[in-house]
Amino acid sequence: MPGSERQNNMFKASPAKNYKQDDNPFPVTSCGRRRNDGSPLFKKGNEPRKTTKGKGRNFRTVKEGAGMTSKGVKEYRRKNPGSKLKTAVIGKVKPGSKAAKRRKSFCARSKGWTGERGKAARRRWKC
Image 1: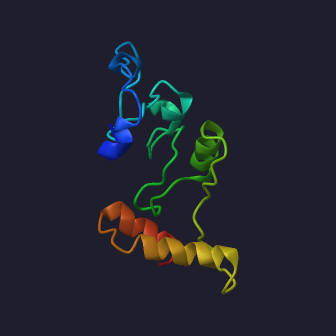
Image 2: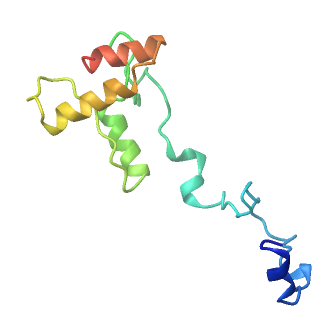
């Protein structure tokens, strides 16, 4: 029971059966809360398939510069309402504009990417 010994002695101890939930279907996290894995927010199918080939592709190949296609971004946003995911900033931008700040932020965040796809994506963003 949390609190000091003096605080704990001020109140009657309630039976432990009130707190134990054996029949609860949701798992307990490390902090003691319950995670609702059955919620639509936690479903695994919310991300688009990571495919770079064929008709329904959502990602570019390494030769094309990696990253998501605009179609892939639209699909992701449709499946995740409220998402602010955007496509890459690839064109020429005015210094200090929102797009320039987004590019600068991406380049700083992705500096440690050493894989083939990461390097291709950084080239596409002009980092």
